[in-house]
Length: 417
Image (cartoon, rainbow, N blue to C red):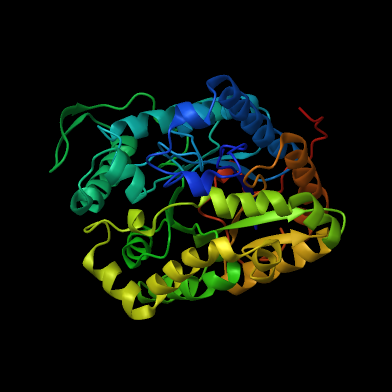
């Protein structure tokens, strides 16, 4: 199994009364009241240091993502972060998992193809190309994409990017949303025919269908843990079977919040306030922000309602502010505790969900830099060595990982930054 450190880069010092005083952490929180640009610069540098440290500690990948106008995770330019990390990690065999540049909001989409091409070249062929549809907050409310157009724009952008990477001759593109007379991409990625593509999703039927149709890795990104993900991942695997696809676990990825300490009791002392901060403040978003009419297509909307997944998601969102550390841990929203506790839960989750690409959120909410490094240390030294062999008893190849990185990772002895 390949394990990557995922990082949101949230605001680590929101005021105690944030969720009482402000409507949302996303779209409309006022930067001048809540943040200082110099302090934000420190957050960015801590984030880069934490990801680089995880890479040198032996994690298989390091993962960044794109969001806008929010304090929950403010990397509006994930490829800026990726460029710094590509250069910082040269000489290692860690994958750059860009999860990633949002396709419908990048105009023209060949900008994504160009920047991903640069990252693959700088890193020596270590890029995983995430292709997110984008949240309704980012794409619709902030960047002004009409919800009804968002998926169409996404599909067109995806096809244009893959053709730009692979075409040996200059071509014209006359799409519904993009008209380009001369597409002749410089640079091209090192990886042929193109870098592996990962498609993040929240359980949408259309995203399952798109991932299966194009033979991409489907990555379920949720903050509600492995138990809540079982229905979603069963639906994905059932859908993949309809396409005649084999149950290669590396066809799927999953995001899990993880907090490791010396003992279960010490984990609560170390992490409780930061986990509660994340769920109370970083997910302080009005439910109606998630569902502007048209954002979901008919198939996804119907199946989400009929299956009950939509109702369960809204129900959980409504309960978050009532939960405390014990609730989040008991429900496995966060896998927290001693190394033995966490590794047993992660192994069980990987098997139950049948995922071969695990993303772990090792910085959570308001966690300070030193505590994040401790979490990385304990995870890398005492958890990860016990979970990477989950699928070794089955004869699968990870076709959705950079080819030159598919063997065992080299070991490094980094110092803390």
